Image (cartoon, rainbow, N blue to C red):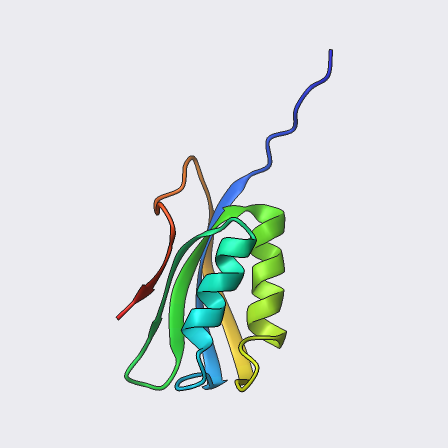
Length: 101
């Protein structure tokens, strides 16, 4: 009998600093999140940062965190990525990956 390891679903909040507005950062973040099968949201802040939340299997969330830290959209310049409130969730709290206006 094989046992299936169910990977933890985690939720993490993020804020990305640098030149991340007006460079399609939200659109690329949404596309990357969907590609990895994650749910959550992304939005611009009045302070010029991008804020959001990621939820999904731990390894995919970690992959997305790396992407947010080092890749972003082609014209973006990321100076800092902060991740906080990481926690294990029983189920996903979002149905898709949304851009919040």
